[in-house]
Image 1: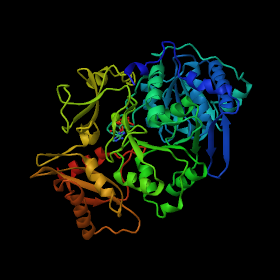
Image 2 (image 1 turned 45 degrees about the vertical axis):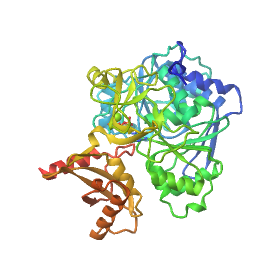
Image 3 (image 1 turned 180 degrees about the horizontal axis):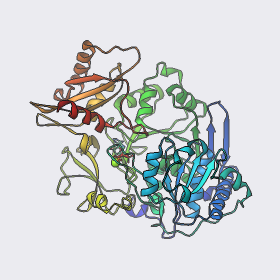
Image 4 (image 1 turned 90 degrees about the vertical axis):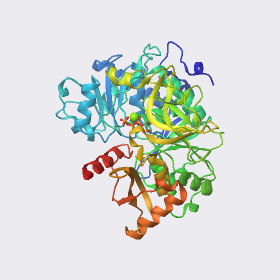
Length: 525
Ligand code: ATP
Ligand code: MG
């Protein structure tokens, strides 16, 4: 596929993709199960009508095209309805996780110049004390609140007809904030045209959604990953999205995959890891599953092995960022090399480059970069010229991640630039060590960072969360060290191991190595 195939028509609104399916009255858009085990479903036709009512309610309240709205709604039909309503009215969406607290919201509302918020009632108290509180259009869902417009109620008074407002492909559709794994979250400007490029890249080729498929993409609303998969990729292809509104549990997830005969699964490495560690995997059968993908963090070889062995399905990795779309991945019919992130996605020119912006030879570690003219790339960091400029080198956008490309063009992740460990002159990517560690039966989760050392500059240190039933002691330390030595270059083994109860994570579940690294620095100074 050529780059041109990712460019949207000039007059374009991504909601057009979703409207197309509403004519077929019986086409099911969404199926959900709640924590009580009850199942509900919604057709495209119903979804659109409800989105129209909500859009009309937004307009009546005084919101208009180009305004910005922060949306903080948990997994529910309403989340889809509200997002769609905003797109149709040209209101810019700031996805917001239900886990955000007042301080996080204040940052986004001030920095993002937000005009309106939609919040599930039980999160609404987090907005108390926000500077702009009195000037925001505030809509509550699920219950009425003092000072808030009760969306569930007012929408019922509105017409279920609404035309999509005229937008062109460069108009802003989303303003997501990055996960904040490395520092303050950055506001990322994405146009309607970006949505089109994303659909072409990820939905058809990577998720490999086929007509009539039931797709479970587990990301929760509020993350760009939700916009990517459950929202755009599912509704944009006319598939049926499944979601579970209860809490994650590995066994429950496996059971749901079987019960609802899910065809396509998009999950995180952490969730896959937990599923792969369930005892008695042979009790679950997943014959309907024809596509399983992972993104967000490195995917462990252990997971790929287990899923292949028990379910005869190859979990395919994909790499991307809030700032772009899927840049690298294993498309459906590609041969998977476990541990690699795959190859550039159709239409995207991705390279490993050096400090001068020149492509490197095979097997040399450098920066993962993508050509600046990619339609799948963000427009800019909102109100941050400096950072936007810093992310560019020559004709490339640099991702901040490092990798190498092998002779056959497969990319292998080394780590985030800041996470790379330099020890006694060796450059060590934390992922390879972590990947070896989680293959050990005792390891539930782990993170590997640099720990300052007088002689070597740094040494490799592993923080390990043990699986239930395993005891931390010197013998286990030795066993884990030998285990790593047997799987990777022996110089990479963790000279220090510390057992902890929990790793520091972002609210989206990503490991914050920066915290562990800083702890090590403080301890050694
Ligand atoms: P911040 O930029 O605020 O520090 P973040 O980079 O974690 O947060 P996201 O945009 O959500 O925010 O995540 C993108 C990053 O996730 C990538 O830059 C990369 O480090 C990591 N990542 C995503 N997919 C993969 C993958 N398949 N393998 C390895 N790392 C991945
Ligand atoms: Mg980032």
